[in-house]
Amino acid sequence: MSMMIRPEALTGYKTREFKMLIDGQWVAGQEGKVIDRLSPAHGVTVSRYQSATKPDAERAIAAARRAFDTGPWPRMAGAERSRILLKAADLIEGRKDELAMLDTIESGKPISQAKGEMDGAVDIWRYAAALTRDLHGESYNTLGDGTLGVVLREAIGVVSIITPWNFPFLIVSQKLPFALGAGCTAVVKPSEMTSGSTLVLGEILMEAGVPAGVVNIIVGTGPDAGAPMTTHHDVDMISFTGSTVVGKLTMSNAAQTLKKVSLELGGKNPQIVFPDADLDAFVDAAVFGAYFNAGECCNAGSRLIMHKSIAGDVVSRIAELSRNVKVGDPLNPETKVGAIISAQHLGKIENYVRGAADGGASVALGGEAADLGMGQFMTPTILTGVLPEMAVAREEVFGPVLSVLTFDSLDESISIANSIDYGLSASVWSSNMDNCLAVGRRVRAGTVWMNTFMDGASELPFGGYRQSGLGRELGRHAVEDYTETKTLNMHVGPRTAWWVPR
Ligand code: NAD
Image (cartoon, rainbow, N blue to C red; front, side, top):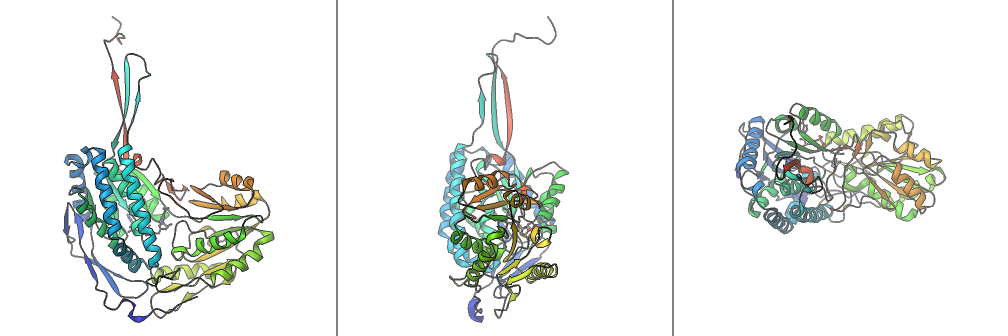
């Protein structure tokens, strides 16, 4: 169900001008470049950012290095850092509507969803604050009378944090509070399309009491601003979320100076459905999984692998429900599917659909862009008769496009699920726990949902197998991920053993 965009939807909205945050100061880029961001739904310039180039990235890294090497942040008690993170969480909560509005008008995501993402982010900041107080090492008093071993957890140093456009505020919140909790300092670069909410976060962190230079935020393109953050000698770790292609490039750049790398990359997530599943629940989850965030989601449940005996009937029910999904103005609180991030990306989605149809798949629903009078939108789309070897079954479409594949046996369903390079998440639907556990144990994915889809919690680790990434975010080890381990091996008492015989 599509709703035309009202031309006056953003009338009167004043373009917001942002500077970059370096060493506690809001500054312009040294080369005077700016980036204008148009709302993808309304075609109006909503944000203007200063665009960083290599000298700006280098200044930001130098500030983070100084703050780490000589500043108070890494030396503070965990309880004090935790207090500041909790204050930041309260301030985020207080500015939730403003942050949600920025993410909505810059990314095209529905406003009601963006507000939910802010609630999720606040919870993550509070969770990170709690973990900060618990960060500790180990001691070994079991090595004999003459030895005491103490294992320290030390902040790893300066972290480059690079984020994508699809969940701008949520993703920086999956990284930065944990890095800060460990005592690290950071240079953050959001996507050049959706930098507004991350820059507001800079204001929040300054107000919360994060010292100058601890968090530096620059805006710019990948090659101009991001690449120097992945190669610079003074950066100790990179935490990157984005495409697998840029993730590989990041890893290869990091290799020159052997930085630690944490990568959250793409996904092509299978949903395996058995005939004994609660199909009402599944049909709703299938629609949610495919069209949430317009399918521009690493976790999108874009690959249905259904038992042959139910596929025809279930697809008809999914198609029927899909027709009721509201596509339209992201500012309308009833909208479920907003705008596509850019015209170029919409073209890519349409190409995948055309390629699948040319290869023999059938378009059971949608298949085209939606003309809502302005902006760029895609209609919810279902492709049936998709074969495991087709590009649409193996690659990230990153649009509201559901591919339907079928299986005869449990082994076949798992072999189809594992036949691609990604391994971010998966789901299994069955009332038989044996089916659920067989899939849960054998599917190569970082998260497996059972009779549910895309639920998350700050306590649960998240990340991918294979080419979906490296490392995990969230969960109780999330602060530790930003540390180095140091062993203190101590001799106790008079020396009794000699290397040179006496
Ligand atoms: P992208 O890889 O194009 O860009 C991500 C970030 O990297 C942006 O800030 C970009 O400016 C920067 N970048 C680009 N080139 C760079 C370079 N040469 N050096 C350093 N930085 C560079 O990804 P995108 O299009 O913004 O986001 C969509 C992708 O992100 C999808 O593949 C999606 O699956 C993935 N993603 C993964 C997760 C996860 O948790 N696994 C979550 C959200 C998105």
